[in-house]
Length: 227
Image (tube, rainbow, N blue to C red):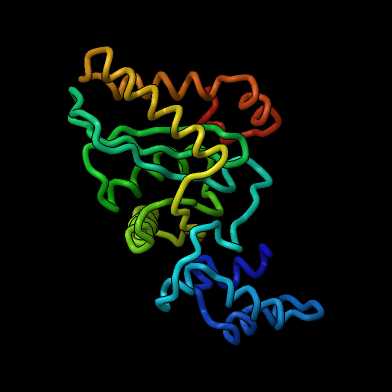
């Protein structure tokens, strides 16, 4: 599935049809029934179906990668309609590693494609390298623009898959709900002007829980992120 995902779904694959996807694979790969597998995969591609005007499957894309290491798959969510903080922030952008549950956040004044690309570079890329997949619940056209901006920032091609996820689920949903509940409660009970500081403290609390420390303990990250 990962090979088919690379050939058809990611930026270089470009959601091509059955024949072009098969021809992309043929010089490097072969297995019995390969053409039939390509045909099934392309026909089941959620993004391709939605682009052609068919109803979009609300469930996960068949090409989604199951993470095998930290930060291979990262989910992204926005928390909106927050009161303006002393720093002028009204949005909170959340990233979560699907493998370990590690959560990162960035309070923001605006959420243009350029802004989101810069935050992804700061929060994810500089610290952990490029993720293979970014799951999101935003407009796919907006997210494509985000990664166009990101590639421009780096001056190179960043190959990653954008997996549209209409609704958060499982671990990601629980973490997002925890963050939202905590911030909303803080705003209701205390001075609203420093909710962004509270959000950063909340990330520390979530990420230092025993289960998440254990998930990350066997992995080494770039020295610039070690403290």
